[in-house]
Image (cartoon, rainbow, N blue to C red; front, side):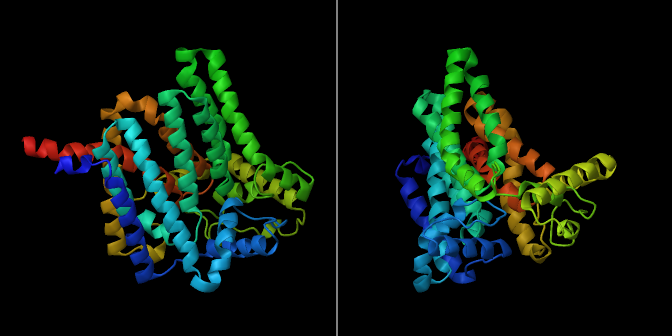
Length: 400
């Protein structure tokens, strides 16, 4: 049976299967429109109607997902909201091929790569977000295609790969700004990985190339922000403050943020200037942490447990079948990831970019807000690392 997975052409069948599985799911339960979805759709329409000029007002997230949705907006007339889910289905299925390539590069084993691809294709959460009008499919795609180029760079040391990493990681930042805070750490990783092999001078050249590619890709957005506000803003104008305050305020008792339950912005409504409001929220969050260190530590504990929860956080999904689905998918990956990291520690150099991304994402959401949704981008890495264990398991069982 193991030899069956050695077929290098099997990935084509997996990709076709992935698309059909998600289309069936879309037909059965329909496109998932959540509160954030309405924001993306409204902005996408404004971008399309405005000849692809981004609206000048503030927005809580990166601009790239609304731009992508704007490209398919004319088809909404014929297919309804299903067209956005279909676009996400294609992106999610394309990510499977990216996972296949990363797994092949790390483990040099087609069977392991095929197993990773199959797991990704049937994984419940990836399928759910594939039919939801949210940013997750785009963010995961751009993150992992950038990490694919980083792994290729580690393996072959072609400067074109580090340039492509910089471009793709910047595109992930334009989907979700969390990548912005992470990027300097990847530049540092280049130096750490290569300073002993090629010398510090060449390592700095590699680092500069990646930084330049990232900067040039982000530059149009930064110019736009300056034109709108007259100030330099690396993210969307006036969004860093609200995110920090949501995760660190006296109303936050769970580590998440759900409307007026875990955050209340009323005290800031009187501040009309967006940048001044953002600054006030940042100061309020920092002051609350400094004045309530024990409460903050307790909140950090809740965030950590919420982030790695075996079951879903939202009350409407707290049913036995959702719990079972989560435990049998994410729970198994969680069980396998730690022994895999140890067993394949000789591959650490190759999987270090994904390990770094995972640590940074966890750290970021310990600072901001935590949720199973925000954990999703590290689960492809868990799939990759679980696959060689699953590949070895039948051999272990039958050999006994």
